Length: 320
Ligand SMILES: *Cc1c(COP(=O)(O)O)cnc(C)c1O
Image (cartoon, rainbow, N blue to C red; front, side):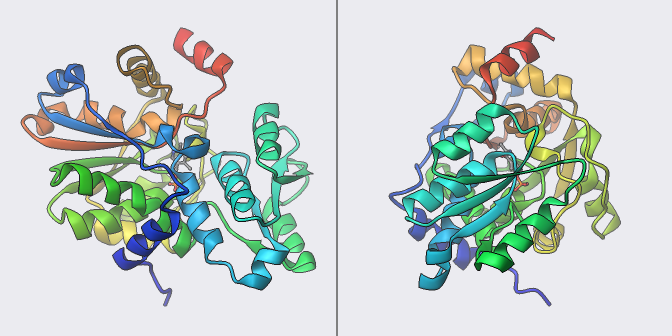
């Protein structure tokens, strides 16, 4: 049996990240409240350090390293927000970080990761197995591997955003959270069940990659091919061994939205709320809009998970 993290772990993570992670703002919009005939609270993790909630989990995991682990450093495989979160956390804690990235990762992501002090190791997406490279590096140099979502300290750290939201706004009737591999959703679930036990909690995936919904409804982890969607932070192929049982136990349902709906939300956030939100960061709001009828008169939370999108890509998405 795995030792699943609980709300005490989320509270401990909140203490560890204090003074390092931003306590992100909760924003409201009269336009949104009118559209949904509800009171909607947006937790703005697009304004978190390095642009996404992932800093919370990465920093929490790295701050638990012992002296020997710190000296050798951390390794991870990711081309996305987790890479930058690990690189930044490691530099703040004064330890080396090795990030295994594909040869065709966007130059801006490689540059950002290097900019935070990360040591980037490039692999060939078509020939090499990135997890094997990560494990080999860990083994050879004594590095500690921190995966992007399936780790108790990562889950506990991600849960601190929802904890802050409930502490700030009080009880909610429904809460919508982006879902990839489930680190954010399972952490949010621990906070929700502890602080707002009656709140309906929904995970939201892109329609093209609904492995989480299939897993939730079938009762076991379903694996899929890398889905084709603009929500690059949710292109995961399966939930994790830690994240799935928590989601199964504490989440009310998993919903899906289309890429077109994500673009509509990006446009809305930019034009009405002056927020730059990446496609994956729009999952929660897109699902809330689809549930308009049920949400009338309710207090609703939406977690905006990230804002890292190249400006060129942002513009071209809005023009489609
Ligand atoms: C990683 C990520 C997600 C998905 O998080 P999981 O913990 O993998 O479910 C959602 N949104 C953004 C912006 C992300 O970077």
